[in-house]
Image (cartoon, rainbow, N blue to C red; front, side, top):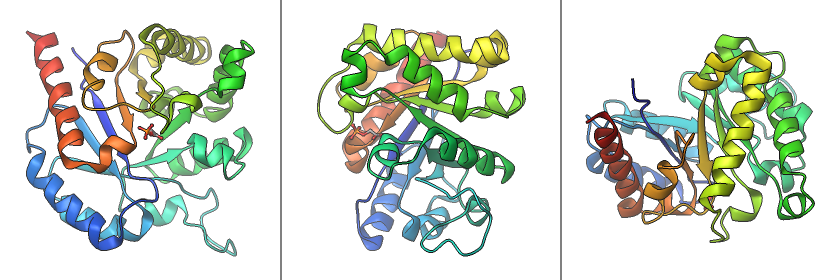
Length: 259
Ligand code: PGA
């Protein structure tokens, strides 16, 4: 059976609540209800509940952009996985902006992955090397550390449900293009790490996305790379035409694969 592509838009800290909600309304009209791909958007916390109502009877699913690992308590400014569980299906964790701007380390990210799984949602765990790490030939080690620590303590079943996004830090929001062989090799490494820990079957079931400056014109090429199960899109998900075009491309490729 051909896997459905997973196309996720990470809106980051963009759009006012009114803009986010109006964008979501337009997206509901634009993305066909019978879309083949799994389409996910990650708006900021302020609009999540409202957008959950807007997308309720559409094919679009929701992700949060972050969550705290404790269920409740004196954690000023944080939102727990428990608070999100009836609103979103996924939570993006370990995004490079969280790792590098907000100093989140592998241990904290692993606790957050646990909390998201415990709450019944699914994590979209982001991993990826910086430019310096790539230049120092540390890509394999970094991916291994981020994957093994991010998934630590999970059962095979939980890992199989986890989505992993390979996002080389140097390609995020920079317009720098990761070459197909770089993406294929990193994704093979990630799948190899999962396979070594949980077996081939689990590694195969786990969806692994690529993310980093993907656009409507490069999406098709990335989706055709061996091992790529979908895309995590930042900038290009903020434009109606480019995001819907990426979804249409993914659907078309699935139909071609099935034919
Ligand atoms: P970008 O962001 O597509 O703007 O590079 C991707 C991401 O950060 O998930």
